[in-house]
Length: 146
Figure 1 (cartoon, rainbow, N blue to C red):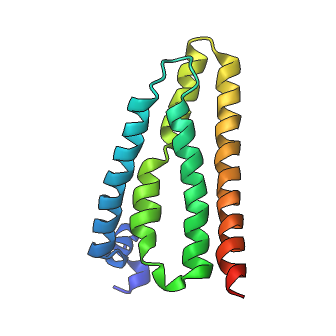
Figure 2 (figure 1 turned 90 degrees about the vertical axis):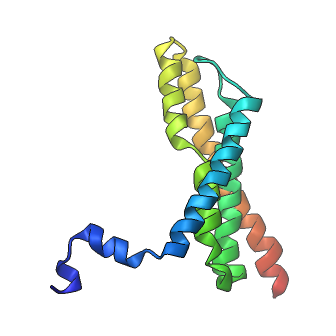
C-alpha cells in the first residue's frame, strides 16, 4: 500500500523518532514541574486572579519567542533543541488549558469581570511577551552579528 494511502496515524508514527519522543517527554516533565512550583508559590482560589498561570503563560511566551528566533535565525543548526525545549519544557510550562478552566471557575463563582479581565490580560501578556522575545532576540543576536 502506498504511503499516501496508509492511515494518518500510522504515517505520523512512522515520521516520529524515538529520540524526539524522549526529548519531548523529558522536557515536558521539567516544564510541568516548574509550572507546579509556581502554583505552590502562588496559589489561587476560584474567583481570584491566578497569578501562577499568568506568569507561566507570559514567561513561556517570552521564552518561546526567544527560542524560535534562536533556532530559525541565529543558530539554525540547533533546531534539534525544539522538541526538548519548545514542545517539551515550554509546552509543559505554559498552560492554556488551566487558563481556560480558571476563566470558567471565576465566572462560576460570580466573578465575571475578573474572568473577562483575566482572559484578555493573560492572552495579551503572552502574545506581547512572545513578540518582545522575538524582537529582543533578533535585535541582540541577529543584527548584532551583521
